[in-house]
Length: 320
Image (tube, rainbow, N blue to C red):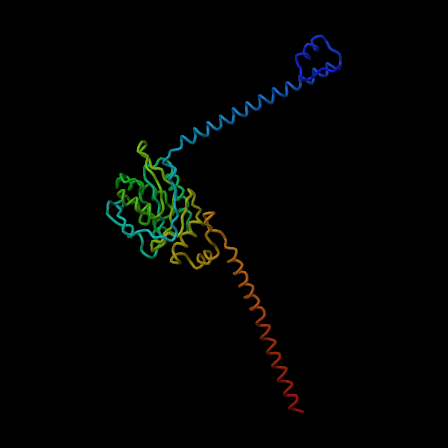
């Protein structure tokens, strides 16, 4: 009679008394089954414990994210205008307005930062300086930059030091001292300017720091926002295209304007890409032009030959 594998105690007793071969196989089967069951239970418990631990860790990480950061973003307001009557104070302590930096000729790069920012502002402006040093367009001649501090407590002396720091780094831009403007403002003016360009930031009273995004707005000479850069990297070719686009054709050479025509702005990528349909149109136009250049002389030659043969025929008949 075979042992019932559902009764492991009876099988263990038989194994202890050196059971026959059939019972021994049942013992081995029960042991294997018990081992597999034990492994499965351990695995499930371990997985559950790990999942709970990961969930707890994620919850702890979420709890550590400051609530102030939830509203920190940039609402792109393409096509809207920057008010020209916002009161500012430049790095020389002179009262001015935003409209002072728009002359209907040169586009303006607008940034919102503050000098005591521990990380992001330094990273952003350092990367901007690196890109501007490789740019063929010139600050002051082709475009201007306006940086406004979001800290209403920032002094004129502090903003002047910040300007001197970045102007010194722009060794390939000789017009940076006169073309890059650093300004402070009262809180009401800062908020009004930030709202105009969709710049959302918050202040942490405990740390005395501002939570803010990285933003570079390309504004036309007439004050219309044309493009945004929301990264901390500024490739010179992309910056140049954005400036030419914002200038409405007032800066750049004829070649630059042609290159600009070949590109289009991809809002999803946040960069300029080659416009396929424009290249197709250009290719079609070039094909037609080449055909005309090639075939027109041929047609003219055939017409002249036809006229010549007609004249010969007429003369021959006349002679007869």
